[in-house]
Amino acid sequence: MASERHAFLTLATAAMLIFSLTPLILISIFSINESRFYAFPITGLTLQWYRDLLADERIWSSLLSSLLIAAGVSVISTCMGTAFAFVVVRSAGRYWRTISAIGFIPLAVPVLVLAAALQVAFVELGLPLGYGTVIIGHTIFATPFVVLMVVAQLYRYDQRLDAAARDLGASPIETFRYVTLPILMPSIRSGAILAFLLSFNEWAIAFFTGRGFNTLPMLVYSMQRNGLPPSVLAYSSLIVIFVLATVLLLLPFVLRMLRRD
Image (tube, rainbow, N blue to C red; front, side, top):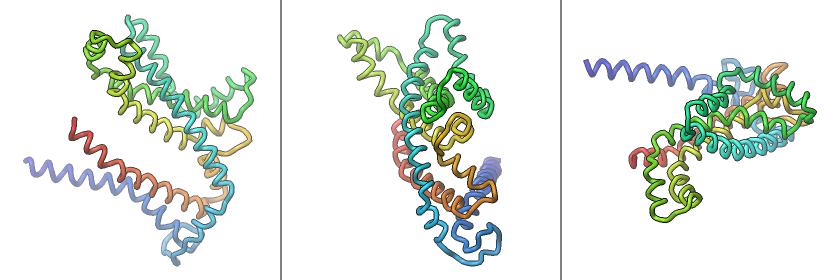
């Protein structure tokens, strides 16, 4: 019985991996196809589409815009999300916790609805649409995810550690800096990475609230209106390679942390 269950789980995992990875593999194959049309059979192998991608100035300017916005969103969302997580977990009284639940509304609202609402709000407030409004919109979108990451760690946090530090003469600031913050740092770091990736890959909010520039998702969307060009396939393939390399680099550290826990 156990062997049958193991075989079923193995087959289910293999089917899920094949289903998930097949589109990424196809993108990588078509990105080196000589033909401009992504279809079999493969007519030949070439790196021309990668050269066209790297020679396109729009790619570099859009990449810089995406990186700047994502970095700003990551810092702001991490600070706000960490502070808000303390309100959710350690606030006194059920009314404060009920009120704090309002902060999770962006998780339940569709991104397109949130993007349109933000555009209307910014226009009515007289804010010029640009980098600032995109950063604000992405921060509103990403902060609840950071809150969830930190809240999960805070619920497991032993507050007797803070009490012990205070008994040994540490001030509240020293207790937070030398005791609380190091323990929460893995979840805070994970929230910062997640906020960065959410902002870097987000399209709808940037499209509705940004003017005068393109982020990478906005540029890719504009390039595929008349058919997906091979350079976009090359871009997608590079993103897949980057993510795969990042996962392989981080995997030993994650496994070491799991063994330590």
